[in-house]
Image (tube, rainbow, N blue to C red):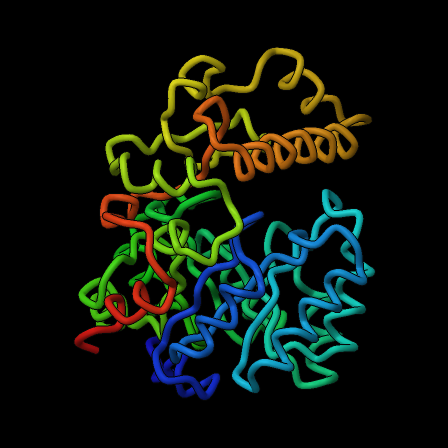
Length: 318
């Protein structure tokens, strides 16, 4: 079913087909504004803001700075108790697009399309891609096994080939992109654009500790491992001494509670909250006795510098 779909730059009216990925506790208004000024688009997680007023203020700040399109990542399953309120805010303030994660985007698509908001949906395989396409999604964020954070299990090329063959909506490749060659490879396989996160973690604008940023420079791809300890599902982290100390697997109690059908919903929320608190501690502390999220593209991070410079290098040659 290979079809010609618009590239992300044409779809959103931007200069380059790149989304600066929404990263928990990392993406902020300074990063979004710098990205928009540099010719790409960017998104942030709604959960980066504790209150609805803070979320509204962030959106207003970005809109006041630029009329370029930006998006918000929304967790759409029951592990996010703020989902309903956040969705209402995004619809009311008319963000340009919403990226859905971890659940069915049915309600988001229905509400967003009423006011002209595009909806891109995180997927890790063809099964879920077809589901969101049938629901009317405007694009697929194809999360591959090179992605940072919650990654998929399929290689970038294999995932893109399969989705391009069977899906007719735009595909945004997420994972393993560090330079213009990686972008060209994704586009050649049928992607409409790319979503890039890891290489931006060590930018000047990121509101994280100097220790976290320096770890992005000091560690490499070989130091990225999968852990289920943080959020209950597999997530890529830097294999620091602290991670080695606490391990990467859920303990027996965590496993037992997640298996209990009566407690599953609440335990999932608890583990997710505990995990987020653990990541939050890492993000704002200058010690390795924490957990720092990153993907294999960490290999390309050689210094801490302004986000605009990282973007300039990323798109050079396109």
